[in-house]
Image (cartoon, rainbow, N blue to C red; front, top):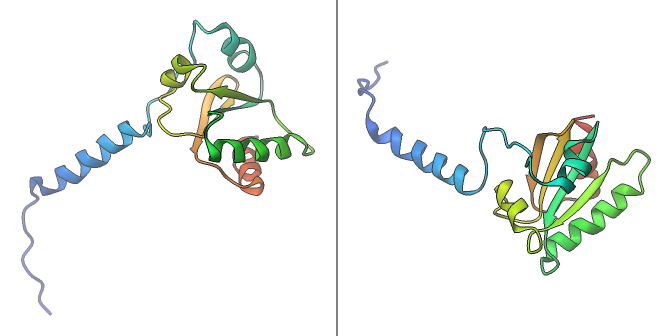
Length: 137
């Protein structure tokens, strides 16, 4: 059995890697840690200063998937072991949305001890939301 000779590595692989990196930055997907804002008193009191898990959902009133996620979050709050949930309207709090690089809504951030441990974009059903949160308990 014979195989074709191996070609030397080329720069052709570099282009897809750069495209993926650019898309990751554009959509707010990165491995860099997002620090909570230091100058936002509300955020410090309700999210950064809290022990345990806190969920923050960025959305807008005009956004259909955001309203759907709000209903799911209300159902979750009625469950046996809810965590604090805070809703941030991107139209009313654009600086906070920009700080967290929110480019699509609804965008959910899960904080543990004041640090972002996970984030999700888009609406999800109750069982998926509960499973996502439970991973970090």
